[in-house]
Image 1 (cartoon, one colour):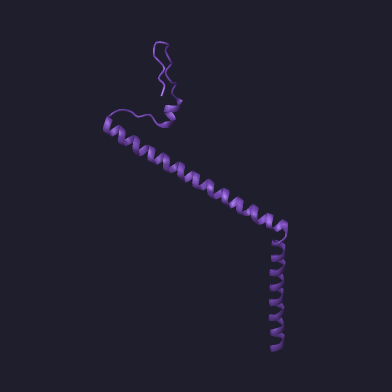
Image 2 (spheres, rainbow, N blue to C red; image 1 turned 60 degrees about the vertical axis):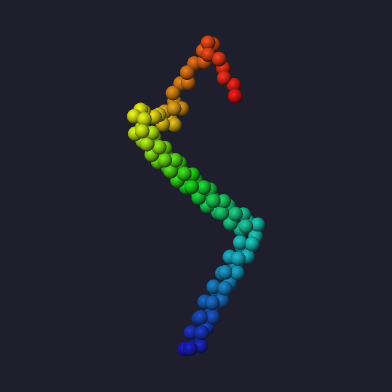
Length: 101
């Protein structure tokens, strides 16, 4: 009975080692390296996207804080960045000189 147990343990260990060797050999082929590289780039892209979303959310929060602070101190309305972009710029009169830096 003991011998049968150890034969089973040896067979299981051998199967595990062969499976690991096969996986390692596949990873070292050009296709395996390409797949690993593609997975890494996919993870990097997802991480950069999440980082960008966090930065944008932080920027919006900070813009709201600063807008509230300026409105509190001045008593006037401060347009947000989006509002400022949507407004039409004033027309350039021929009577006003063009300022150059």
